[in-house]
Length: 499
Ligand code: NAP
Ligand code: MG
Image (cartoon, rainbow, N blue to C red; front, side, top):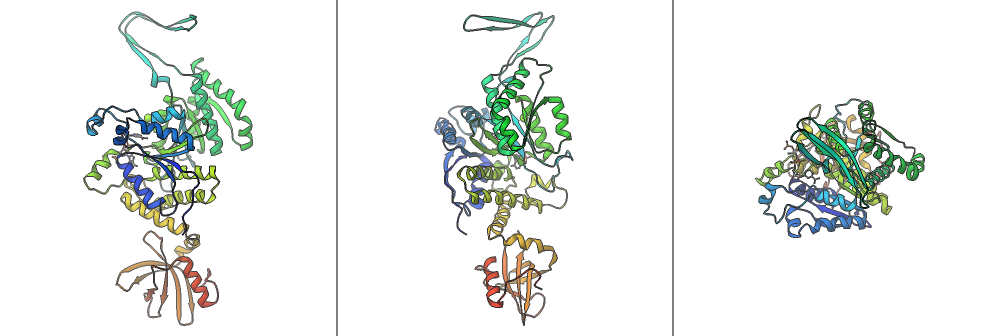
């Protein structure tokens, strides 16, 4: 199979701990065998961030600005304990925070849905994407404990000396007070990222706040969204057949629960923080949540929503094989490759992204999955290590990418019987007969290996008993060559219905 070509490199941001281990495995098993992968590599692993004084994070963000599409592995945000663990020069800031600040983007989080893991809310048929405003409000607040009776005021002093003053509260006893702020520029970028992403996804956009209570603060959010929509996006939304609407946060919550899903819900900072955790849990698991940072000028950075899975990494360091779920990280790669394909007009690369996702979902829905999912699964699940899971996906991808023969074969899978094959070395393989043709004394069959269902073998029946099939050069035979060989020998193509 020739490798799929790329034009422009992706910005690749490597990371830490268990996700760094998975990152390398995903590349080795799922990407490099199929794609002539071009990336501009930045090592955002904590040791390298420390060595470069965190310059590498800034360089990576600048590269994303230049190239337009990035894929990022989860990274450690250092705290006190990490300072000693990694012997750091400084407690570096969160890389995601730094990148977000440089790209001025909004984070969209969407669950990956699979058959067999039902959302808690039965009506949800499609994913719900949360867009969380990532600036200001309670996350940049200023708060104070009030010791006793007294007055708290909001005071604004303009550069030109103008003054506004308002009483917050006349305290008769002790209490607390908090000051919040936001910026028109930040709200506007948030709005533009949301409108751009809704158009990209062809999904409706909802925005919610509490403007009935917060008549100046939340009302500003509502008005900025509405103005930008009317002036810049209304026509494009109409052309795409999607809608934007604003509603109160409490009304939005009620509608979300009753909905079928399949839309983007833009939330203020705090609402988005809370609601995204609720949605992740209700849809299944944090390990199945993707995250994409979209800047108002259309730069995309894809990643998994979860962290570096430290607990699993410590077990990995002790030599254990862990069952860490790589799905969200795989979808970060497929998302980035699909976006690159769209920008560079590479339909083959875009198809590859589809195959990568489909092979992952099929592997899960047919019962092979990591431990976290097996716990949520209704029915019999085969709980495997990360490596086994990735191997199963790779097997499926090979099958799907080899001329589409797999799709035909799958349709007949259950109608035919199973045979056990013994090869020359005495190894046994159980196979399903997907095509069979009897011609004269000989029987020809195309069999599918059950382990991962990936292999198509050419076998010859020598007429002894039901198990007397043998391999013919199984290593060199491809599905295509089996069909071609059959046709050559029999003078007609192998067809459905040949019995
Ligand atoms: P975490 O890495 O998301 O893991 C928390 C727990 O969730 C894990 O211990 C595991 O539970 C489960 N889990 C998460 N992802 C999983 C997966 N792919 N497969 C299976 N189980 C999964 O969060 P954390 O432990 O709070 O944070 C660890 C580090 O990640 C921190 O240093 C933090 O700074 C960083 N972080 C980075 C990002 C980012 O780069 N985007 C985001 C969040 C956190 P069990 O142990 O019960 O199996
Ligand atoms: Mg949260």
